[in-house]
Amino acid sequence: MKKIVYTFIILLYVGCGNSEHNQSKQISYNGKKLLEQKCSKCHNIKFPPKDFTNEIAPPMMTIVFHFNDWFKAVSEQEKLIKQLDFVTDYVINPSKDKAYCTKDMLKKYGVMPSQKGAVTKDEVRAIWEYLFNNYTQKKLMQKQKALEELHSLPQGEQIAIQYKCFSCHNKTKKLVGPSFKDIGIKYKQNIQTIIKSIQEGSRKKWKISHGATMPKFSNIQENQLKIIAKWITDLN
Image (tube, rainbow, N blue to C red):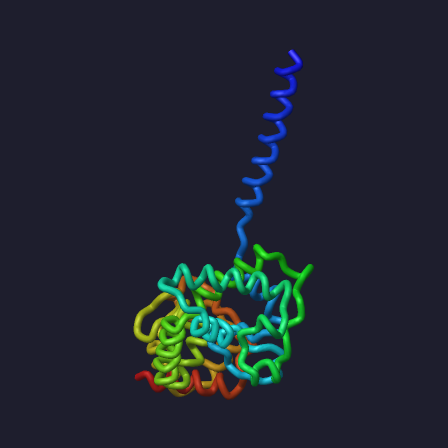
């Protein structure tokens, strides 16, 4: 009888241990969110960075690109594993001897302070896996191409894209609201009405919208309003 009781206790203990272990494995880490929470105070996490002012640590894109040059491997998976091993150790226990930075970078930024207690190793791994998979040369080229295409558009259209005007409007076809072309035809001689509708919003001005409300965009600058209104009237 005693053997049966002991066996039951052992099985219960082992079972509980396995359950806790499995639960820890099931924790899901959001690398992007952790990057914003844990790293953005010191590092520029924009990809690509828009400026390099007031830096107290290297931009994340620079770090990732340097690491991809420094860590040699026969496959991307092996490279990721090597980087993860280094980063999880360095973030918690940094030192000048461990650093892969150039002398100029070390002189400019110094050695990273230990993040022990501020971030766990699992969180560091999640952050780096996100960076490794998303801060790539290929994605940088795609972003740069998209920016070039955006900058080649008329300025008024760029502003319309910036403020997500194309969610409800199309250049030539009706969506939720009338097309920009139809707006331009109707208010060709009254450009101020377009500006006012964008600033203050509007409702029931267009039957084809079936009562849909045009939200107000009071955060758009005055000069931007004039540019987008002129672009709309010039579409015809």
